[in-house]
Length: 413
Image (cartoon, rainbow, N blue to C red; front, side, top):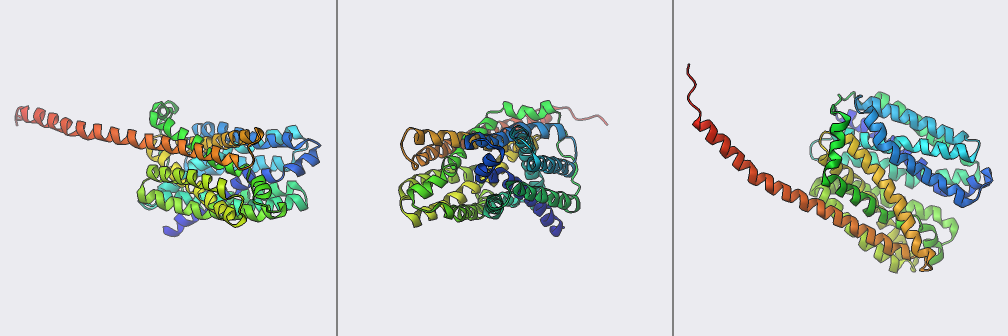
C-alpha cells in the first residue's frame, strides 16, 4: 500500500515538473521567440501573461466541469489537454497561434494542482497531508532547478520549439504514470456547483485569496527582476545567470519540503504567517546585501526556499477550510498565485521605471509579503473567534437537549 502511495505521488510530481517547465521556461526564451517570429521582445512578453490568463480562467472552470468524475479520470483528462496544447505551442506557426496556445496550455495548470492537492492529502498518512502535497509541488522546484535551465540552454543553442517538445515528453510520461500508478479513488465531492461555490461567500475564503495574491506577489517582485539585480548590482556576468537561477531552484526544492513539514507541525495558517514574515525580512535584507556578490547568492537561495515553502501550507489551508468544495478551492489558490505573479511583476517594475534602481522591487516585495501575513493573521483571529463562539454555544445546546430529554414522559410499553 505504501509503495502504491509513493508511486501515485511521483506521478503527481511528474505533472508538476511538466507544468513548471512550460510556465517558467518562456521567460528565458523571449529573445529567441521574438527573433523567430519577427516581433519585438515586449510583444513576446505577452506570451507569459497569456499563460497566466489561462491559469486564472481554467483553474475554477475545469474543476467545476469535471468535479463529478473520479479524481484519476480528471487528472488524466487534464494532462491530455496539457500535452496537446503544449504540442500546439511547439508547432505554432505564427505569433497569434502561439498566443492562443499559451492561453490554452495554462487552462489545466491550476485545475491539475487543485485536484492533485486533494488527491495527495487523501493518499497521505494522517498528520502528513502537507508533506504529501509538497511532493507534488517538488515537481515545480525540480523544473526550476533542472528543467528550466535545460530548456533555456536548448532554446539558446538549438531551436526554442525543442524546449516545448521536452514538455510534451514529460506530459506523456505523466499520463502513463497516472494510468498505471494512480489508484481509482472514489468521487468524494458530490455537491452541486451551487453548493461548491457557497464556500466563496465566506470571509475566510477571501482572506486566503488575499493572502496568496498579495503575499506571494512579494516573490515575483524579486524574481521577475533577478537578472538585472544580479548582473547590474551584484556584478555577475550574464552567462552566470543560468547557475544563479539553478541556485534559486535548489532553494525552492529544499524550501518546499521544509514547508510541508512545517505545516504539519504547527498548522498551515501559522506556517503561512511565519513564512510570509520571513520573506518580508529576507527581501529587505536582499535590498541591502545585493551589492555584495556572495551574500546576494546566499539570499537568492534563502528567498527561493522561503517562497516555495509556502506552497504546501497554502494548499493545505485552503483544503482544510473548504470542506465539500476542496478541489475547487485548491484550484482557486493556484489562480490566486498567478494573480500574485502578475501583481508582483507589475508593482515591482514601477519603482524601476521611476528611476529608483534595481534594488527597489525588494521594498515592494517586502510590503506585499507583510500584507499577506496580515491577511493570514486575520484568518487565524477569525477562526479563533468562531471556535470560541462554538465552544460556548455547544455546551448550551447539550444542556437544552438534556433538559428536554429529562422532561419527556417515560415511554409506555
